[in-house]
Amino acid sequence: MRKMWISSRQVAGNKLPLKALDPATEEVIGEFAWGGLKEADEAVIAAKEAFTSWRRTPASERAAMLHEVARKMRANLDELAVELTLETGRSIRKNRGYVEWSAQCFDYYAELGRHYRGRLIPSPESSQLSIILKVPIGVVAAIVPWNYPLLLLTWKLAPALAAGNTVVIKPATNTSWVTLGLAQYFEHFPPGVINILTGSGGEVGDYLVTHPDVRMIAFTGSTEVGQHIMRQAANDMKHIHLELGGKDPLIVCADADLNAAAHAAIWGGFLNAGQVCTSIERVYVEEEAYSELLDSIVQLTRNLVIGPGMNPESEVTPMIRPGEREKVDDQVRMASASGANILTGGRVPPNLQKGFFYEPTVLSEVREDMLVMQEETFGPVLPVVSVKNFAEAMSRSNSSKYGLGATLFTSDARKVKYYMETIEAGNVWVNDPLIDNLAGPFGGMKRSGIGRELGMEGLEEFLETKHVHWEIEGGKKNWWYPWE
Ligand code: NAD
Image 1 (cartoon, rainbow, N blue to C red):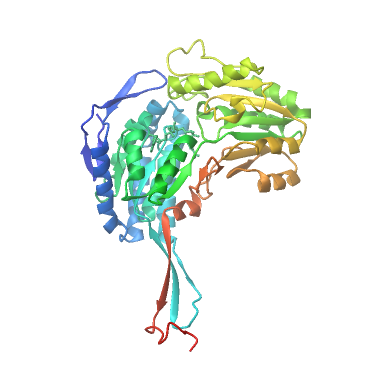
Image 2 (cartoon, rainbow, N blue to C red; image 1 turned 45 degrees about the vertical axis):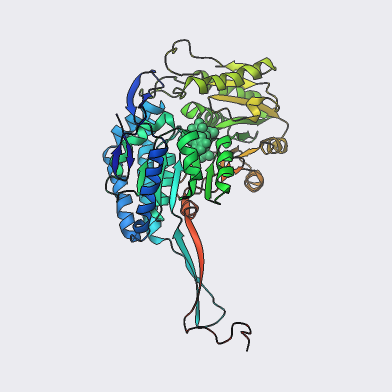
């Protein structure tokens, strides 16, 4: 059984352990300790105590410890990738890449944390110094979802530690087993700097969010839970960083490379079975290109290899749980009942009844008021819509309450300029969807979140800013009338 990791100790907890499942086979892959309020309290106390010295640890020493995490992850790359695939169902090929990318993220913030500094600004008088100081915030609760349990954790953990904060990690239930296995990569940190606490969101998650000693909530997950956290965190005015759901549009103009756009649509729509926050969930195509693009998308979709993530050839892997699959199927059924055409997919693959697979699905004849066009689907479903022109595509894209990512395919630079300035999304891709960059900030607008991960902005989130005014020569004689 995998235990919790609190103050560098293995903690079993008082509750019965839970079982970890492989979504491709429905088999039990291991057991993990399940925490409650007692363990949550221990984790916060440990992180609070560790903060006193961690914040004063020289940035170069912190950097060395972060580099060491990267080194250990690379040394265990295959083993970690297999574990990620077993618990998330995701492709082993992709997971190898994500372990390497996570290691790069630790290296990146190790160095950024060493170089980042405040600044000196002009003072009113020559005897004074005005200093902008950047200081760590304190105990950070890093609450993460199941779809990218390592990567999305790393995007929080690496900058939070580099900035001098201590962290309590709260993984999702579905990926607690693999997250508890990460303790081996953190053994060289002082006790309490990193803690891994399992437990239900409603119990230990809520407890962390309302605990007075937790000064920041760095959360990735659904908009609904993000809204709840924002309300809860208001009492103590905690720092919040929210990476939430999306309904990302892809616009394909008639002047685009349609073959590339079709490949991009199925990759962006069906990667990780559509369980990516920046999955393409709506496709708007200029009417001259509509039938050609739709035909290509349907053909390419029918040729995709559906199968378990452990098979390196699998392109569409299982969904995480039957409940998530039902939610997706409900949206497809409702759309179909209201007039949408299911051109391919829309069912459990007949040859894959075991595991939580769902066929990649392409819909046409969808209307903007259907749930599948309004709410996040988070599954392998692509509604493809014909629009009169680019202006209509823009207006429909921006009509969503979400604003996470958005992609444009065109060869017209004027459209690109207009698009990048006016599309309501934090992550904007042109002719190449879903590409992230460690140095480029990632995050959402509107109901897709607040704040940015990655890049300089991703470190800034974990720092508090102070303005220090210092009269070096001992102060004025008269504060009431400083001009005298
Ligand atoms: P979720 O919101 O159900 O859970 C996310 C985490 O929050 C889990 O660890 C859960 O235990 C915890 N939680 C639940 N209730 C809580 C509460 N009351 N207080 C504190 N914590 C609580 O999301 P999920 O189903 O795990 O993940 C899928 C969602 O995540 C999708 O909506 C997806 O778009 C979103 N997501 C967003 C991004 C992004 O970067 N914007 C990335 C990945 C996933």
